Image (cartoon, rainbow, N blue to C red; front, side, top):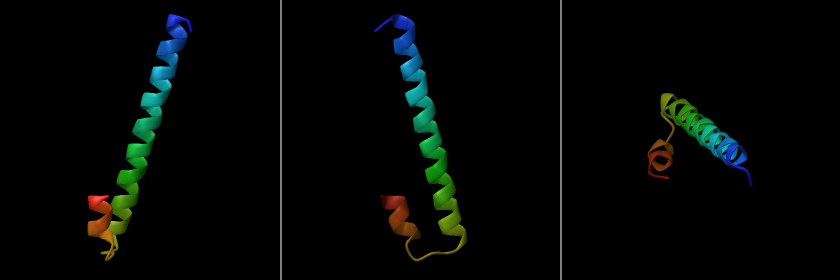
Length: 45
């Protein structure tokens, strides 16, 4: 694999991880605003 291809892959995976992190935060805040009984479990997971 060429050097620039390698860095492109790394950048994509980092972006993917960031998107997943934001999605998790959004899901958690949605759950916690509803005062859902599973909210503490979501935090521990």
